[in-house]
Image (cartoon, chains in turn cyan, green):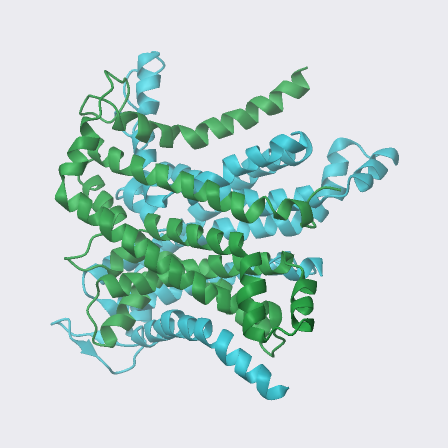
Length: 290
Length: 266
C-alpha cells in the first residue's frame, strides 16, 4: 500500500511541485543570493558577498521615502476599497433578490479579469488633461481650467482603487453571505440598535472576510508597478518602479536587494494582518468549512 | 422610500464608475476622430481596419493567442495533477504544498518577473517565447489548481467507488469517471488561464526579447508615447475576448456549484 502512495505522489505531486520549485522557489532564492552581490564600474558582477546594496538602500532617503509613500498609497487604497466594498457587498448579499444576485456579483468580478494594463490606461482617458472628467467639468462650467490630476499620487490611488475593488469585494461578500440571519434577529430582539448590531455582532463575524479582503488588496497594491508607471508620472512613484529602474540601468544586484526589501515589507504586513485576525482561520477557505 | 432608493443609487453609481473607463475605451475605438476623448464625432471602423493592416500588431496578437493557449494548457495539466494529489492523497506537507501553491499569487508581478529573468539568464538562456511561456504558466497555475480543487470537491466520490467495485483500475477510474465529471472545471481552468495570460503585462515585460512582442506589451509601448484610437481598437478586441471567455468560465465553474456550495442558499 505504502509503495502505491509513493507512486501516486510521484505521478501527481511531482510535476506541479517541480514546476513551482523551478519557476518560483529557485528564481526567488537566486534573487536573494544576487542581492548580496554587487556590480563594478563596468556593470560586471562581483561575486563577493557583501551588504553593500542594503547599506545603500538604508542610507539613501529616496528608497525609504518611496517605500513609506508606497505603504501609504496602498493603505489608502485598501481603506477606500473596504469602505466601498462593505456597503456594496451588504447590499448585494442582503437586499438583492436571489435570482438577480449572480448578475450583480458577476458584474463586479468581471472587470477583475480584464487586463490590468487596459484598465489602467483607460483611467488615463478619464483623468487626463483632455480626459472625460475634465471634459465634463469644463463643458458644464464647473471649472475654468482643466484639473491636473493625472501624474499625481491622487491619480495612482484612484487607479489602484479602480483596479483592486473587484478583488476586495469577493471575500467580504462571501463573509456577509454566510452571515446567519437568526443571530441578527436575536440581537435586534434583545434591543441592539443598528450601529450596535453592526459593531458588536456583524463586524466580529465578518472580520475574517474583511481581513482577507485587505490582504488581497494591500499586498498587490504595495507591489504595484504598472499603475504608478502609467498614472503616477514623476510624483506618484512607487517602490516597484525603483526595482524596475535598477534593473533597466543594469544594476541587477541592487534591484534584487530592493525586491527583497519589498518582500520583507509584504511579509511584515501579512504577519500584522494575520495577528489582527488571530483565532480566525481559513484565508484559503477550504479548511474552514470542514 | 429614501432608505430604499439611496443604497440602490450608491450601488448603481459604483457599477457605473467601474464600467465607465472601459466603455470609454470601446467608444473611442469606434470614434471617427483621432482624439481619444468625447465627444464622439461620428462612428467608423477605420481604426479596426488600420489595426488589421498593421503587421506588428497582428504579429503580437498571434503571439499572445499562442502563448495563452500553451500556457493555459500547461497550467491546467499541472493544476489537475496538483488538485488530484491534494484532494485524493493524504501526504505529509499537504498544507505546506497548498501554501506554496498560493504564494505566487501574493508575490508582486515585478518581483516574479525579475527573479525569472535572473534565473533564466543565469542558466545561460535567452529570453523569448519559452521564458514567456514559463512565466505565464507559473502565473496561471495557482488559479487553475484552486478551480480544479473546487471542482473535485464537488464531485461525488461514490461514483469512483462504484467504478472500482465494478472492477475498473485506477487509470480507468481517472480517465472514464473523474475527468468526464470535472469537464466544466477543466474548461473553466483553461479559459481563466488563457485570460490571465492574454492580459498579463508586468512579468512579460521582463521576459520578452526584442523579437517577441505580446499584445499587452505592444499596447504599452504605444500608450507610453500617446494613446491612439488604434490602440483602443486592439484593447476592444482583447476586452471582448476576455468578457466572453470569463463569462463562459464563470458559467462553467460556478453555476453547478450554486446547488451544492455550503455558502449557497438556506
